[in-house]
Length: 636
Image (cartoon, rainbow, N blue to C red):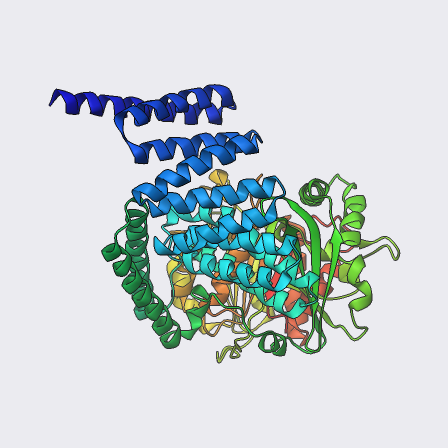
C-alpha cells in the first residue's frame, strides 16, 4: 500500500511538472519549460511509466520545435515515437509521426517530411482520428505541391477538405468556431493550387462549396430551424448521433481498442446513411449536409442571361495569411479567374477604414480609399465584363461583406460602380431552381414599422415610410406602433409577396444593448424575432423581404457571416430576395429611397434596377445616405 502511494505521488509530481512546463512554454520561457518537463521524464523513467515518459518527451520536442531548435526536436520526437510503438499507443505514435513531418518541413527536408506524414496517415485512420487524418492529408498535399507533384497534392487536399466538411456539421456548438478557424487553410490551399494548374472551374466548385458550408455553419451556430417539423426532428436525431460519434472518437484516442473502433465504423455508416435519407426526403435542406462540390455546368446554367457574377477570394498559404486575391468572373457562357498579389495588412486596413469612412458623413477620405479598392477588386477584371452585362452579382466573403461594392469609384471615369451597372449580392451560387411565388397578392406589401415610438428605439420617419409605401400598392397593409407585433406579422406575412420591416434589427455579433436587442434579432412590439426561427414564418410565397433599419458592425475578428447569414436564413425560409442595411441610415433619406424604390417596382422595373435608380437619385450625397441598402438574392 505504501509502495502504491509512493508511486502515485511520484506520478502526480510528474504531471504537475509537465503542467508547469506547459505554462512556462505559453509564457515564452522555453528553457524553464524544458527544465520542468525533463524532471518529469526522469520521474517517469524511475517509475517505469513508459507511456508518461513518451508524452513528456513529445512535449519537449514540441517546445524545441517552437524555438526552432529542430535537431533537438527531432531527437526527442524520435525517442517518444519509439516508446509509443513499444507500448502500443497508436494515437500517440500518429501524433508524433505527424510532428516529425512538420519539423522536417521547417528544415526544408520535404522527402523526410513526406515519409513521416505517410507513416502518420494510416495510424490516424486506425484510431479513427478524422480531424487528425484531415490535417495529415493537408500536410501531405502541401508537401506534394512544394515538390512539384500537383496531381498528388490535389488528391490529398481534396480528401482533407471533404473530411473537414463532413466533420464540421457534427460538432458541438461550443467546439465549432475553434474547429472552423483552424481548418480553413486546406480548402484555400486546394483552390489556389487548382487555379495554378489551370483548372478554374474545378477551383470554383470548391469555392462555392466552402462558401455554402460557411453559411450552413452559421445556421448551425445559431441553431437555425427548418420549416418542416419532420425535417427538424431528423436533423436533431442526426446531430445527436454525431455527438455520440464525437464522444466515441475521443475515447478511442485516449485508449485504442478494436471493439470501439468497430463501433465507430458502424455508427459513422449509420450517420452517413441518415444524411443521405434526410437530403433525399427534404431536398430544401440538402446544403446542410453537402460535402461534394456541385457541378459547375449546373451552377452556371442557373445564372440569369446578361448577368455576371464576381466572387473575390482571399488565398492563404496554409498556416499563413492572405497574400493573394483571386477574382472569379462567371456568366452563363464562361468562367475566368484572375490572381494578383496582395499586401494582407494593407488590404484589411483599407476595408476596415472604408467601412468607417462610409458611415461618417463628414469624411471625404472615402473617395481615395474607394479608388484603391476599385483598383484591387474591379480593375483587374474590367475587360472581362461583356458590354451586354445588365446585372453585376457580387458573392462577397469575409470583411468584404461589410462594404457596398456599388460605391467603388473608377479613378479613370470618376464614376461609382453603380453608375455603370445594377448591383446585387448573392450569398452563394446554387444550382437548385427556385419556383416563382404563387401568392395571389402579387406586388402587395405588408409594411410594419416603428413598434416603440415613445422611447429611444423610436424611428421617427418609419411611420410615414410605412404608410406611404403601403399607399403605392392599393390593397397593401401598414401596421405601426403597438400593432407592430410579431404575432400580427406571423399571421399576415403568408398573404403578401413583399414584406417591409421598418424596425430595428441587430446583427452585431455582440448584440445592440442600446436597443435592448441581442444579436440576430428583429424588434417587434410584443416579442422579438430571432432570425434562427425565420423558416417557421411560412415565407414560401415571399418575393422580397426588406429590412430598412438593421445594423451590422465590423469587429476585430468578424467576417460578415451574420449579414450573409441573415439573408441566407430568409432565403432558406422561402424568400427570393432580401434588402438589408449594412448600417442604420438617416430617416429622411431612407424614406425617400424606399418610396422611390417601390414606385420604380410599380412601373415594372426589376428589383435590381428599381433599387439602382432610387440610389442614383441620391448619388450626389455622401454614400452614408444611399449605399447601406443591399439587395441580396434574385434581382429580377
